[in-house]
Image (cartoon, rainbow, N blue to C red; front, side, top):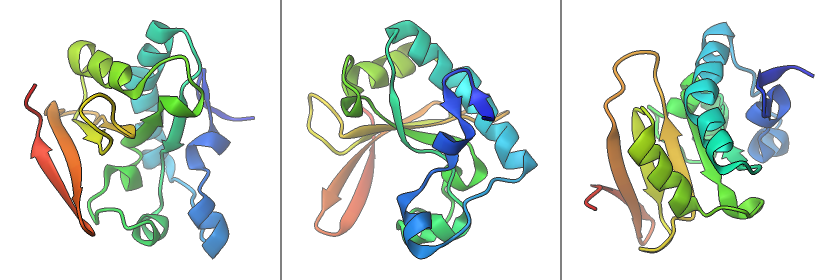
Length: 155
């Protein structure tokens, strides 16, 4: 079984219920696969090593077709293999807030988003990493009806 990193298989990184449901391919090219390996090495594996517990990735690579079907941004870094959504609640052992805080305080990243939830814990953590030019942008997302708003992190 091909691995993206020591704790992420290729199948996990490309799995999409939406792709299965709508029979869409969700296969990264070589450039996207290289980006996936890089974020796994620079972000996911350090988080996993720090907390010493399995951590679920609920969304990693998305083809442009799959991304459109899930309502993702047209510029989503998921389509480049540069972003992942982490949800610690799936497996337990650590909270999403702890993961968010660790990444924010200890790792290089391009974008880190506290995704919905409340002031104590996000529903999941979105993090992206690029080969160059990581801007360390920290955001918090909120729903306003059907609209999603992103605010700069203050805290």
